[in-house]
Image (cartoon, rainbow, N blue to C red; front, side, top):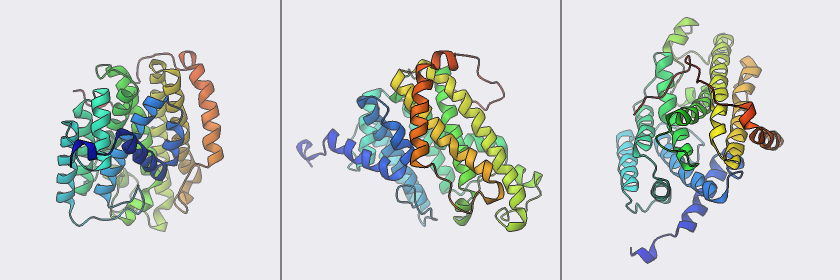
Length: 317
């Protein structure tokens, strides 16, 4: 294939936009608040993340989680195409070429992409967390690292550890809410991200957490996940004081929209998994309006402060 036959940047951006529209209405809505350049780069990064996730989970844009029959081959494929993209090579897969473009345009550190791929390794090897610290390390790999990459996309220096910690915190919040919401779906696919120590604490036998007799105890753990997600979300909001208005607006909207998922799971108690928790279009619009006001007042609302030392902190480079 000659250079002239390669898909244009505009074509890859259009494919990435379609990916985020199909894969996450929440992130798609929030991304539109960015300026054009940042918005397109956010879509490009999302497309790569979504494609890797789908390869690891046997999904189509995050739907229909399944057990894959060839985990080693899939991981090798993800690693090889990611490394090629980071090296500036044309991959031939729109999502991985999206990573190539955004990495070249932003100077995205390869370490964050590699950290995310490590999360896929954990999933493909059917890893389960034993402790709360294990849970946080997993959340970092699959979501906190994405927060760091998004911060770089928004113009944050890769050397600004404090702001990167806050960006990581938002990814942590999103993933903890995801885990709380998807306990039943994960169980059907043979996965469980609740720390074994938590299950022992609640006297829930291994593999039995979705059984009716344990729903009340499971709801306690979901509430715990939601509470911890809220703490990370609050910490992440402080980081918006370092962002441009439009970037802060998008981040605060996403925090509110996605934060509602964890809050809804906690509020539903034992019925949290009767129907999948979603955020309505009206609620999304409400957060977009509210986040605009928060972004205007972010210097006063979220003035820089020392990060809570009790929060788990991403590994330093």
